Image (cartoon, chains in turn blue, brown, cyan, yellow):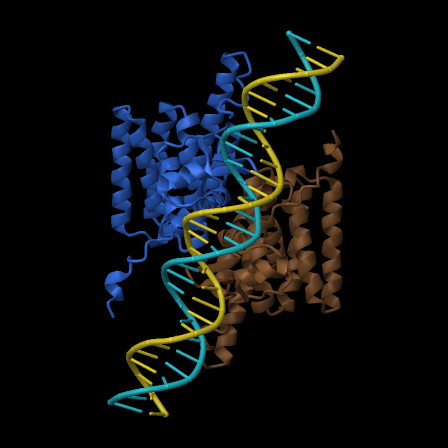
Length: 239
Length: 239
DNA sequence: GTGTATGAAATAATATACGATTCTCGCAGA
DNA sequence: TCTGCGAGAATCGTATATTATTTCATACAC
């Protein structure tokens, strides 16, 4: 049977093709929040019909990456502070649990890898490289939660990270103070894991780590509204 | 403009029609785990084409209520102990948080309503009415978490309850001992809420409440395997 | 000038039709 | 009797075509 050599032979369905095509563009920012996803247009770019593209978009909608309106169309999910807050809260919850349950399964090598990434974050900070910092941040946490034995919760964590990716660029103004604390908290979490701390303690540390970032953002937002007195236009990227 | 009187005139899309049609049947057990969802068949029953039915099924797949295989088709998600464990763990996490954050928003009337439902559960227990007990259990918890201010987490709670609904019938053998404890724990949670306890304490009480039910089930499972020595067929409802 | 009708263009929603893949089952040969 | 093969059926996947809805621009009335 030659099927072993052919496992990748069947080209994944056009729906999946469309899904990864769109997803890729959302992730890397080519489709930024508010961008309108027009079925025939995307279908044309891919050389397929609108049907599979539609399915892909509905999937993305279910994941919360795009918003959809009947008979009107889809657009990349809007980035507003409220969305950011909701996502960060949810992530603090599921990631905290994932990190705690993955902790006992981490090897010394895993810890070492995470610590190395965290050291890299310090460097990115010194070089004022927010992009690298953000990427390393995700990588650090990925090491810590990816061995979570509950696949459903792992999926939820991945999904929220994806949402964060969309929101990040648009509303996250780099806050060096917070970033520095963040690196220190990472080290603290690593130590808890190393010493085999109570899972609940790890969970709460991971949760609080994220909630603190959220608080920093919310404070920063409030302050921003304080200084510029006029109410910023409510729908900046509308239509 | 007469559209005010017509707001409900537009018949929700056929995709939505198909979705609720299938969802209803999964929820009430007419489509039990393993049931095959054949596109043309369902399309015929609804008098629509296969396209919207397909979309509905993909949505249900994203929610984890049906499993899908390329070029083969969809079937209602299988009920096995592992799935039950995963779902209960996830629910313990999100429901715990939802309950804790909803607690400060509950009125005296909410608490009273919940307590009344809990009293009803005692009665259902005395009358050996598992169906009523299960329904009341869901109703009780709904009151406690539905005011959770994070819509995303509320959605996750709803989704997991839906999954439980599918699994329940097939694998849950009624365990009176656990049920009696359950009612007592409900009352304990209510008291915590009433006295304005620390949110974390409420969260952990709600979480533990569910995890204890899960443990009872797992113990019961292990015991069952102990008595009947042969390994039960691995895929009971297969194909 | 402002607001309201009207029609054309854009777009989504669905139906139909066809092609591709997988499954089923009987038959031939060992 | 068992195993491998192949034809046909069942079913999914997608393209094309049609219909319905929304949106936008224009013109008309007040």
